[in-house]
Length: 596
Image (cartoon, rainbow, N blue to C red; front, top):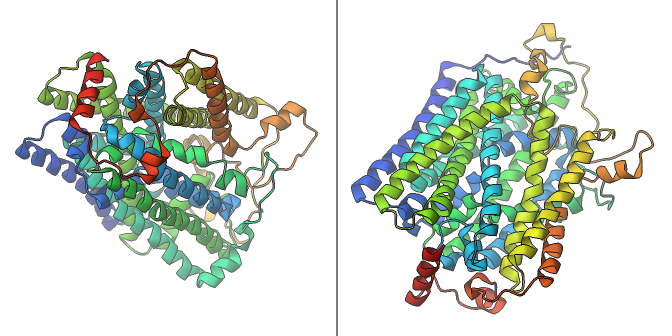
């Protein structure tokens, strides 16, 4: 018997109503806080960017989680597991390590400084703006292209589900998010994130529960997805795409970088005290891990579902891009249940909204605090707030333009962009860690080390992309014997390949794998280029850290170092932290800001 599947275009009116309601609710939350702040006369930068530093633990924690729980996780993790196995679960180890380290070693140093952006720290630490502007430029680049790629990828998925042109949803998403973020500030972002967290979690659970029921229970899921239970990868060969070591250990700098990103630090600074900021990370770790494990299990359920049907829809040619996997599965599982496909659309939309709003708020804060305020330190509060709103709108327009630009870039170039981003996180993390953990480092030494740390991973990336090396292979495909021919149903494989293949949620390409095996003799350099991308951040971080420290020793020692910017174990870990600065310290900060 042929497996007939289900095609796109099966949504009911109820599904569209749920989608519109999600968009409308996000917009109304932003409008509410805009009116509320106007009523309370809280129109100043501290309220707009940091919610008056009075955010409660639960909403700010959920907002933090959602900020990094974009549609990349909702679409990418299940697809990754479908092709390459549940070994991805080892990634959770690095998350625990990174979040715990951030809570006890990063937050206690940064929080008492009472800054607005993370890049202000580098000015206080070195007394100049060189490293501040270098890392700021990398941060802006990352945020703009990250939210643009996420937006386009999400809209492509909705094109599969809803049949709406991706350009239309790009305009809707960007416009709505820009409006509610610009008028409502960080409070609107935080509370829409809370609403979106609930929607996203519900959407993930719906797919898992329905899939388990269709397969016949958890035992049947294990039976059909046993080939994806590849947890025994402990090899030390750096060419192996995924192992315990490169997922659970050497990927730590990749996650540590998120702690130094403005969206994360903005939430740290919006809390009332250092204890709340620390607890935000300690609570976020298990919750975030549960969500990630849920999406990994979702991938196993989807593979088991199609294996039980005798049709691997990716290798059987029903879908031509692995990022169509989850949307297509949702249509098939819930096609006869009005409202549930709409719930998935709402969940995916919420993931995109959360990423867009967090990045836009962060970019606005960076532009105001690190550029506008540096040049105009005496700007009035009301003028500053209005100007910040305009900056948010400006970045929204930039994101819209870059998203359309991304839609016209071939997939290999998208992979190249992702590689560039990976070259930045390790060195950026090293810049901040050297600055906090060593009194001896200098601006020139750290900058030289970061440059070297970016150059080596970039070299590896270019070598991997442009050398004649064989593609990695995925795990064995599922059965395809019952897959119908394209003429029997609406197949997504009939879509023009370039229409959906220009964006990938795989970190670099769609040939990610847990195994590496050579198909022909390779040169020494070609073997070198086959190093797993999971090591790139670690390589960049290690080189930046070591070279930056050694280069600093070759420079003249810094004459003055602000002790508040340095980590001290006895003070920051063993001692009781002060939640507020004394008048003398505040005066010192104000004096230094005036001299910038």
